[in-house]
Length: 387
Image 1 (tube, rainbow, N blue to C red):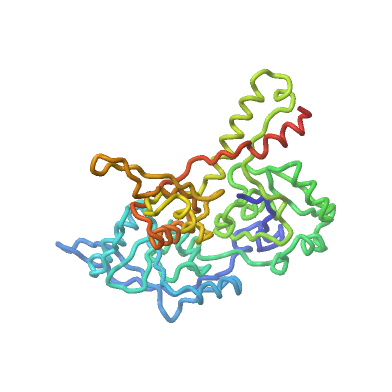
Image 2 (image 1 turned 90 degrees about the vertical axis):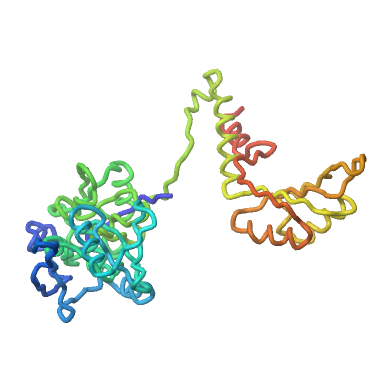
């Protein structure tokens, strides 16, 4: 699920965007030492360490929510460069200090240093380490001085400091016919329609090459209207979503031409099959088949035991069938097979309950499809087509 929403660069007026110095202020200010290089065999320098002065490090928390996040989080997070020479040198340096970074899988972004309890190691891009130190998502980090100097600043809040909703945006006196709100978006129909409906008369729209998130920082837009999933990219580019700025909630849809469905031979049949498969699969997502053998005098007695636990009833009820075996030349029934369908969240509890009432040899397998008598959307489609 992704939402199409409006995001603002919480910084400044278009005039202030004309130069980098006008939009930035030190939010991550620190003093730096440059101690002597650490030397290895034959005096070869292994790394030059740049340290943050503990007394001079000041992290400006952007808002109360970030501050709460920092206080509520228990684990201490250390950011390390994810690749490149800086990454290799940092790992070697830590290893020389008897602090071995243990990474189970080289593709994972999280690791640990066993010698330091309650410490999480996160591998990040260098500029993201600085940004996440500012946001409070990291507590410590190893990064180049050049990266800190380049990315250790965030734009000023400026005219958008107290703007948190579409209503407040529309009430800002800045937007006039001569100085309209500039919005970068790829949605040239939905965007203008949405802003008109929210009372913004003086708005101009433009498209931007590449990522829209860069448009405000480049000074070519005051806001963007774009598709948002997790919101991580917005935060990393110092953008904020505003209340009431969601244009629509988007999701994947299966579409067809009405004319083709009615007039073209075979299109309706293929649509029916795809619809059946989609609905059956989506219904089966997160569902498991559980089979257990259970002793009992008869199928009814076993079914009664199973149904004494409502969570074991399955879709319409348990399937109970005899398990035939051969003993002393005779076919006998000692067990009954119980088959139920359970959701993933209740899987282990269901297995426990089956064992509690005498189940054994429990088999579990994920479901691929659950077909109903008819796909629920099929008759609705036929009704819309008048068929």
